[in-house]
Image (cartoon, rainbow, N blue to C red; front, side, top):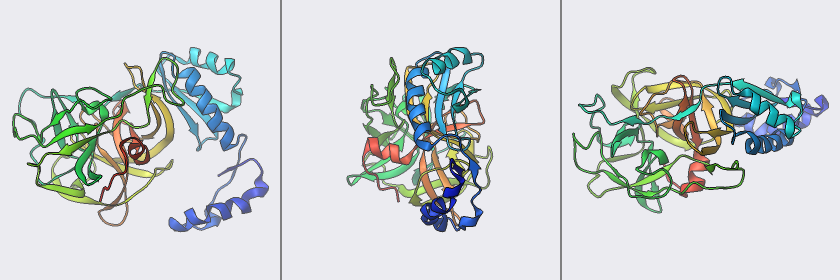
Length: 346
């Protein structure tokens, strides 16, 4: 915990007591560090820096970095000069900002293969399995009911047109393997200039869409995510995870995803609520989370979760992209529901 005034430790412990008790931690385990900047300052600078820097070529993300008591700005290799100049113009104190080089964030969608896929037909339908929409492959995130309508959640970019409902059809595993359509896109907000969106870009707070299960999709496992026998590129389903709670990620937390390409992977959360540019587009996703874990093309839509007792898990959000192959980005569940409406996930 960063404290500008070390004498406030007692008040901080009392404020955090409910959270600590929930996670089985004693207040005495808190480590305090001298903080130069308050959280209000960091959030304010993040908002201003997002507007000023994410419109520049090569900018990747802007994060109010609670782990380091700084604002961290990610840039593509060799692109830091313009970003540093923009920070100087806006008057952000030099010690408050850290500019780091990183890979661009790209969508984790895969082209539809011309031959047979290794990812097979799975019934009942559940989170983590392959879905096919015209020309491409993604991952089914999780099943949910919305206003009593049986549905599943995947990415907005896992539709024929990202942002805006165009009635995209879905099959599982492939239209060429099983031509019975399983679902139709019914909810996908448009991208636009919302609060905090950099000039010249379009934004949302989640890369998420909702598809309504067709009446022919009678076998659906609500609250279930496919499970392999271990983390790694093993795609053989040996069981299932059960969603028993919904939550929010914190930096340093161990989280997991299951996707049709790289299977089950797990790693630590490295950033939360980072405003993130999508490489090769004018899209900025506001307040996204980063995880140090493997990802590949086709994993878009993967459910992201924390494992509790046994196979019980807490659903945290939905994966949509990555920086290279060893770091993925996901939209928090709270943002998904903010844009798609209330969801019953288990």
